[in-house]
Each structure stands twice: as structure tokens, then as C-alpha cells.
Length: 113
Length: 115
Image (cartoon, rainbow over all chains, first blue to last red; front, side):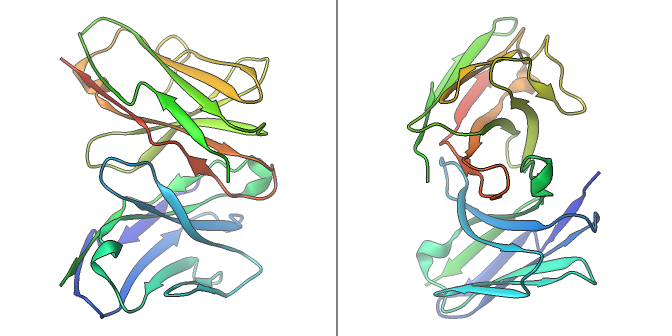
């Protein structure tokens, strides 16, 4: 089955700097790669996703890149703000199998002001 | 995206008891899932809740421990049976509105503490 590894486990950046979180997946058939942000005491919130037919996707300060050959994808957050502090999870799935997501271990992002 | 409501939001339970968590969605959805998030950990899929039939469980999870119901397209329940302290976790309901869209949305979770 699919296995997703996520690095780093914790990341501290200064406000205004960029943050990058990386994930690798094992199943080359996976074709959907979302990123979730989880704030303390809340459920995960989908912030951006990418499908296997796209190499990069941007949404304001957030971008995701996908390298299918290497089987890795990354989340990029630019101009970080204190409200970006949260736990971020990457995930992978094969949507034809019913959207069953396999999650990475999570990254605790701390943005210092 | 769908609005997902879970009850209870948190509870403290005694060892050996059972608790049922409810998940209500504000619109009809094609698929509903239950995930577990142990303290400080990632999310693990427990099962897919199938409307009108038995849930499909992932490896390591069994129906006797986690019975699931889904009587219609907007509602599901997860019961955690015969609880032990190891069951202390956040249990999350998630839904998708399209089989091939991929987007999965989560409720706020039900935080269970078993003493």
C-alpha cells in the first residue's frame, strides 16, 4: 500500500521568511496530493491540492510542486505570518479508489514574530 | 465545501464503556470516512462508511471494536466499544462530494479521553 514520508517534523521560521515542507510517496499510481493545515483543537483544513497531471499550483502565498518521476511533492509558503503557525499534513491517494488518503506524519510550523 | 458537524466534540469516558460519535453533513455526499488521530500523531483511516451496507475497514480495525452505521447520505455514526486508555484519540469524520474529485473535508473531530 501507499506510504507517505514527510519532512521536517518541526520547522521554525521568522515572520516574512519562506517555509518549505517536503513529502515523498511510494505508490506510483497515486494521482492526488492534498495539503492540510490543522490548528490546535480543530479538524484538518484543506489548503491546496495538486493532481498528477500538473507540476505546480499556486494560491496566493501558497504553492505546491509535484515531481512524479521522483515521487515527491512540496508545500511552499512565502511571506510567512504568525497565523501560518499550525501542523501541516501532506497526503496521497488514488482517487479512483475512493479518495482514501494516506497521510504523512505532519510538520509543526512555528512562525516567530 | 460541505459543513460537517460532529457530536460530541469531546468526552471523558470510563474504561470498558462504549461511546457513539455522530457525524452530520449539511448536504448529500457520496463517501464518508472515519479517521483516528492519536495524541500528537497523524491521521489513520479506520473505515469507509457505506450507505445501507457494512462499512469497509482498514487493516488493524475491526467491526466489533468500531461499529459504523450510515443510514443515509448525510449521516453516520462511529462507536468505540469497550474502551481502554489506548483509545484516547481524536476521531474525525470526513466526506467527499464526488468520487473522482479527490477533495476530502473534515469535521472538527471528537476528542475522547479514556480513564
